[in-house]
Amino acid sequence: MSSGEIRRPLVGLVCDRFFVGEHDLHSAKHSYIRALMSCSRVSPVLIPATQDIETIEDYLDGVSGLLFPGGASNVEARRYGGISDIDMLVDPDRDHVALELMRGAAARGMPFLAICRGFQEMNVAFGGTLHTDIHAAGRAAEHLEDPNEDLSTRYRYKHDIDLTAGGWLAALTGEQRVRVNSLHRQGVAVLAPPLAVEACAPDGLIEAYRLDGNDFALGVQWHPEVTVESDGTSRSLFEAFGMSCRRYAAQQAVVRNKG
Image (tube, helix red, strand yellow):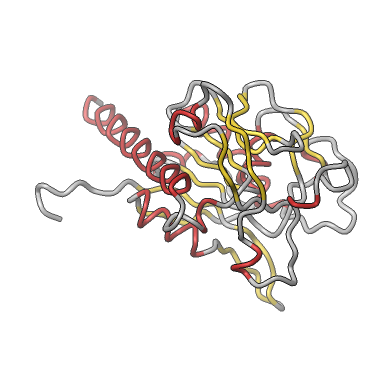
């Protein structure tokens, strides 16, 4: 690395845990890795989803930001006092790691971006509850994923969202309404007290919020990682996240040097 080149900060990307046959795997979709590397200009590192982790402090000490991605599973109902997980894929190991990391990052003022499942984790982490099934709760079918569609069709823009006037997203985009590729089964029932709404869907379902007090602590229900190359809002989100991670890394370097 040349003397004029700035080292890219490390950003933790939380894995899902699942089985393929008899193989026990930890993984993250490449779309998140690509968006972090090409748009946020950070170096992603994968954090395993396992309850064998004795402390999250080592992970928090080693990164300058966290991304909580979407996933095929849903947050366990017991985490927020919801109804049974009947006919629902869950990942208790990811729940354990993600919720602890998110609360730890918030306490440190570390930037984090939470997407889809991560968005739902964010509400639960800070005391909110979820609709286990938004369609059963009377929300519009346009939020739901059709697994029979090919990926490009599945991740098409589904509906508009209205951005909160005076909010962070409205300031970032300069827009009052944007179109998003939102697809999910769970959704916010009761909003966690520390969170501030940044956007809602036409049916009233919350689609984005922020945690006040952090430089960047944002949750979005849609999938900006898929559209960073073609969508200005998606690109702006990942660019702003990367800038916040670099600021945090610089601040931590000053603290270490003083020590």
